[in-house]
Amino acid sequence: MKKPIWIFAMFAGTLALVTTSAWAFTGEQYAKDAKVTLPQARQAATKVFPGKIVKEELEKEKGGSGLRYSFDIRQGAVTHEVGIDAVSGRVLENSVEGPNSD
Image (cartoon, rainbow, N blue to C red; front, side, top):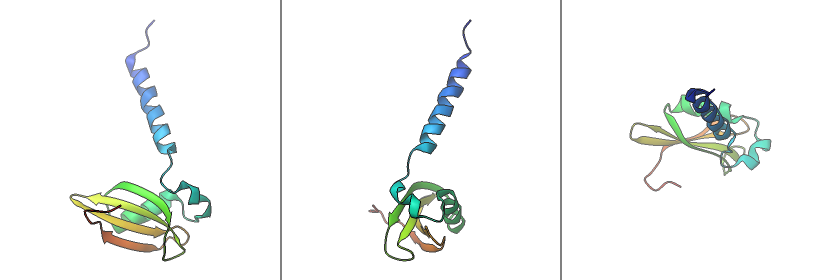
């Protein structure tokens, strides 16, 4: 008896979702030092500038505690970089991304 194709499609979709969400963001090696979780930082960043997160990383950078989540958030044709301190949760940056951003 053949299994319906939708079972296979559901399995493949679930596998893709699990592997994608388990896939590390840039800077994962610093996560042990962060007091703010990635989901908390995402929420804070999109509260500052609502839109679709197109890039996220955890990096060591001057300012605040020295450890920050950096999000590129797109809203229409505009992309903002929003920086959230990974220790305090404070907003450290909210600026328009230039055409040659890294």
